Image 1 (tube, helix red, strand yellow):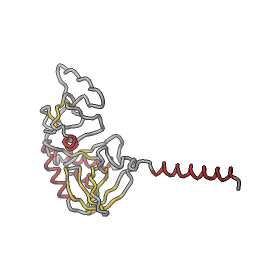
Image 2 (image 1 turned 60 degrees about the vertical axis):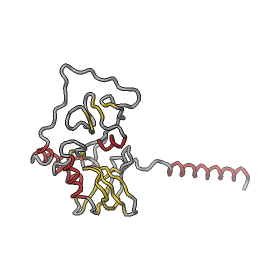
Image 3 (image 1 turned 30 degrees about the vertical axis):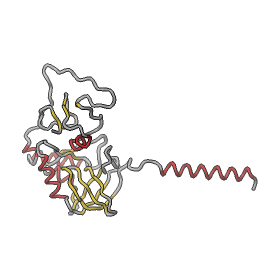
Length: 234
């Protein structure tokens, strides 16, 4: 075997190794198709909980497709209590959604949580009026079922649909208030101090960032000001 042939073979093997390395280095978690089993060790709020997996690892899980009231928002305490009743210390199955990311920008695992009896925790919360349907960027697989559950809860005036009254209409100032100029960088113009421009933030995120409370300057796309007093996440 000549030196030229040996050299060619070495180069081919090196290229193959580089491709394999590059493939294995691709960040995991871009597509959320997975199934894990574990038990719920803590309920953070209505739509966020900690699950101890069979491996012993504890994952913070954000439920896909729902949004529950938080902080001082109407029905926040009830939503958290209901999630505890349904899931705390229970054996659960976590299922990802191929249409969604595996994790959100805060590292929380995005999943449907199936509780004993083969029930979807998110669906149960929506059907009871403890949560609303929430779509982040892409429609999720169970969107149709969740919307049907929400329509049923509204029709029955269940949970927050009764306790919290009619939805607050969008604020339209008269005369129109000047729209604040977007600050430099990635700061959302509707809040002070600076909040990043992302698909969604909740009060737990704001407190984790150490900037609560925040002043709402105009519209409130992140729904942080539950009592409409101009301050969010008090």
